[in-house]
Each structure stands twice: as structure tokens, then as C-alpha cells.
Length: 160
Image (cartoon, rainbow, N blue to C red; front, top):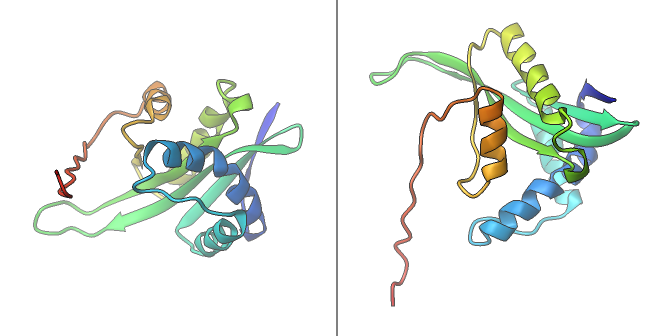
């Protein structure tokens, strides 16, 4: 049985360790963008995020052991000449231990994020993933997310 709990600053090390699953995937596919990092550096980074009132994280546990997490950030953008004002919850990171995938862990984490978005008056949740991460695309699609924007890249470095 998986339980979901809200993370606090004391969980920064747990988040840093769980992040390794995703960081390794990103590093494997985009070493031009991502770099190797360590738990201590990530721990400090997560602590700084968890101190912010707009950041929330949830940890999934199975048999008392952390097996996944979701990190979300509330966004609130005022109206401008191009767009209407809007508030949304951005799923910044989600990771599940490969041994616990396809068991409803990600769904349970996203459900917590949805409930939090409702509490905060955010009527949308957005998530992004790298183009190589088909597993994430499948997950988000399965959970009802629809594609919103596609970002393109052009390497203008030496072509010789």
C-alpha cells in the first residue's frame, strides 16, 4: 500500500535521492544540457525551494520507504497586452522508483497536486517533459493531460 504525505524542509535529502532516477535519464539523453550532481548539492537546492510559500512537494511511501515524489510550484501571472491573467499549478518534477512504477504511485501524487490546486484556486495544472521522455508523455496523457505547447531547438554551433 502506498501512502502520500506532504514534504517539508527536513525531506530535502529524500527528494534529492529520489531525483536520481530522473536526473540519470536526463543526463543519459541530454548530456549537453544536464550535468552530474550530488545529493548534498541537491539537498540544499530542495531546501531552498521548500522554504518558498509557492512550492509544495509530496512524497509517496511504500512499506514506510520513499518511492516517489512530486514537486509543484504555484504560478500567478497578471494580465498583459497578449494574455489574460491566470493562475496554475506547475508540476515541476515527478519521479517514481522504477520498482514501483505502474502501481498507481504517480496517479496518487498527481491526485494530491490536483486537490492542492483546487484549494489554492488554481484551475489548471501544467507539466512539461523532455521530448525523449516517452514514459512521462504516456503518464501525463493517461492522467488526462493534453499537449499545450511544443518547444523547438536549433543548435547554431559549428557545422564543420
